[in-house]
Image (tube, rainbow, N blue to C red; front, side):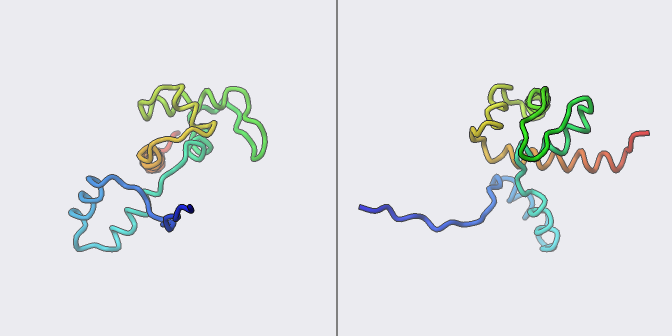
Length: 126
């Protein structure tokens, strides 16, 4: 007996409450809706760390593609992501070794990425 496979869809998982909020606030602005939902493309912990760890922890060496992570890189990522998301450091460390994480983590990381990016544009360091 063969199992029928579900057709793959390329949809984003966004919390229902947030979708309702966005749709309510942007009823007459469909372009703004599209832009906002595009900004909420989930971000992986690895992707987030590759961008922000060199800025937040300049003393930690960044890994090159295909090479082992330098000493202290995962520790810095784990500590930072644990502080931002509220997850246990052991749980966060598992994300780097293939453990799954809740879809809202990807959205949360994208939001932090955007906040830090806009914050650095508004208040550049001297």
